[in-house]
Length: 221
Image 1 (tube, rainbow, N blue to C red):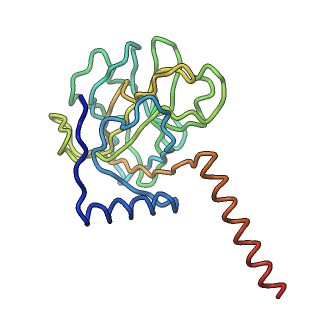
Image 2 (image 1 turned 90 degrees about the vertical axis):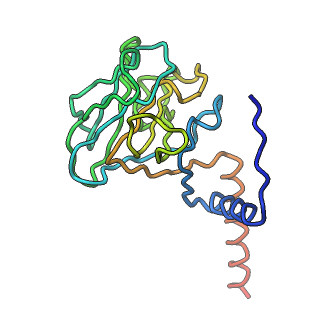
């Protein structure tokens, strides 16, 4: 269904300009409840680092699945598996929870999609996905993350937390909908690191070289 875009007033226009400026500068811009993945069909270019907020349990809440594969969820804490897998996508109910393990504040968390159909694992850390994808290269991102504030959309029985959805199809043969298995995690912080595309990188490099040239000429004078 086609949705009409809201008409922006002066404040909204200024906010949009500020957001674009922040994105251009590489700063982090967080939009709450941007669920589901906003650009299906396009690989997610944002890489996430997940850490524990407090010392205590990491709890996952099942938030839905559209996958035909049979998948389960797991967790690595500082690179070591907690040994707990569950919330199978074809048998779990919305709001069903699973404690994936206890952590210490600041621990680095890597979420694991255990694909029981393929007998393979996909990770929230793209550098670990070479064995999962068909082309055997590193760097493919199989997750999308955004804050969940229990407003819109509303998942019954799920508290506020960090929404993480998996793309379980192997790259490059994927629909890139990042909606194959969805979870909300409590006690988890997500840091976003956007990866610039080639055109943006070349543009930034050109600007940097131009700036260096100006500085060099001024020093010679």
